[in-house]
Image (cartoon, rainbow, N blue to C red; front, side, top):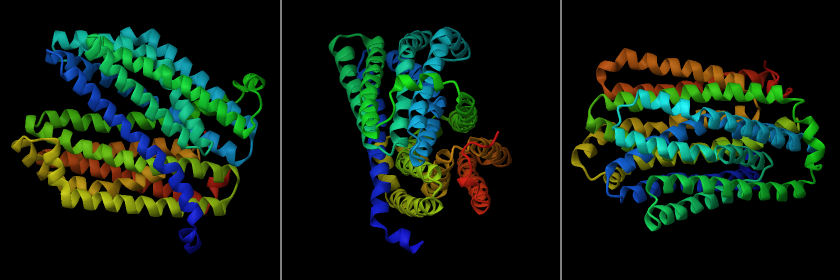
Length: 449
């Protein structure tokens, strides 16, 4: 353990994978801010409402399909560690094929999805009109958006975080520039914002495929045409892994969505305060995700190489830095939380309400870092069933805590969220400890049915 802590090259490897992903993640909320600022300068509020509703529909849909990146990262990293060049090539082709198949289903069914969502929405007719317009344009970017998940996962699994970083930064920069041009310059309003995102997604896919070609040549992988006949051979394994990660993501989305909607029922000040504090939670996730990505790639590589020592050193080094980052975030929220709240909102009632729940948020980094870290371990090990089952139990615990303490209002919601994050970490840690002792993590990946 001491040797791993003193290994400077190992720490450099962790940061070489983690930091680019943290930096690229920063562009995601920046894009959202620019979208809001550009549309928010139009003459009517329903434009912004339409983009917000339509954008949420797209975000949730694509986010639930984020398993494409996770599964690809784990499988590619294991193939990389095993020096199995044919498997590395096949993983990418399988992922792209699955992404385009799912995109086709989304495009074919988008009208039914929109009708179902808007039939239960209380939004005004004007907001619904522009939300549907935004959604119906954005959905055509699905083939590129989903392919980009696979491309990012494959590059990261190939131990290259620099190219995914540039892919995200350049794609989001194009989106921002086109937002300003189409909406403010050409006056295309909501349609302009949607078109900007679609063009950016396809630009990102083209750039991503170029990056893949460069990495393909660097790794000296076999010609892609020679691997096409292998795409269907082990697709069942990929589908099982993606199914489990999808169900896990669905449970996660259920907990966060409930917190948002239940908070809205507690009054305008509470929902506004929760929105401010949830933006802090997103910062935590962006920071911890970078180290989770590093864990995915390094764990998968070590498992593919059947190298228990390398796996152990990876776990020690990445855990060390995750703890340090979590401590820094906790201290920042505890010492400067009120000042940060004041920067986000200048409404006194919202500031007071957010400050009441700040202690819950200050505890989040140290509590949540374990589930982020262990998610990275299990994704790298391509053990989706364990992630699915633990997330289901954690989600049940979320609702149980809320039901038991809902008389405490918003405090009950935050207690449920903290319990949810803690339960995810505890369950995955217990499973990991058992499997580590039994040496299961170095067995054939995805052996669970």
